[in-house]
Image (tube, rainbow, N blue to C red; front, top):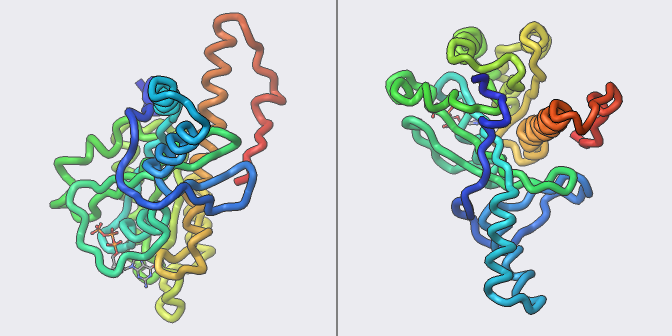
Length: 270
Ligand SMILES: Nc1nc2c(ncn2[C@@H]2O[C@H](COP(=O)(O)OP(=O)(O)OP(=O)(O)O)[C@@H](O)[C@H]2O)c(=O)[nH]1
């Protein structure tokens, strides 16, 4: 089975991890909304239900329906140790740069609920260990049913860029389908005086592997929207891909014919 099959798609088992506060909209855009966390989303829907006078049973049913309907996209973040994988995932899911990080052991999960064209989707980010000794027993789990891959290098470390080839080979070696979207991220662009990897070299590499390139900084708060774009562009692509898969299944039942126009049209703003 390829990793991008609809069967590989995860659905939310219920409320997610952590996160306080209210369901604040971080982007004013009508089509794409980032909710602060999955927990916030469930809280917000519950408080709406009680204020409109629903009884407990109705509220439970609606929150179960919400859980059943929420799709999860699993995105893994791969690359050398110290390139900033943890900081990038932290910036996307928590909106800040961590004061202190330690080497990731195995994997850390972070999740964020986002709304794309009216559908709430959980983006589940797998922050993987860069150090061989902390990852070897976990590698199979990283790639199982993955929906998208983010390859990260450090723009101030040429070695981390050269090693990308090895990371891509590892990914291919785990039967990740060619149709699973992949992006390339050059991190630590705030260290302008120390840059070793020229943009055009990175761009050529990205093109040759059919990937989009993002050059950014997890540290610089002015870059936070750029960091969001990495994950949101993937979520938008996945949502479009998955809708097509569903339509394809329907067509096989003889109900719907998929036209060229439907295949290429997307109102996704990313
Ligand atoms: N200047 C700068 N430093 C950064 C940036 N992102 C991460 N760092 C620093 O780089 C170091 C490593 O960051 P991590 O996010 O822990 O790196 P990692 O890739 O997750 O490392 P492993 O868990 O070992 O795989 C930390 O000291 C961070 O503070 C950035 O955008 N700019």
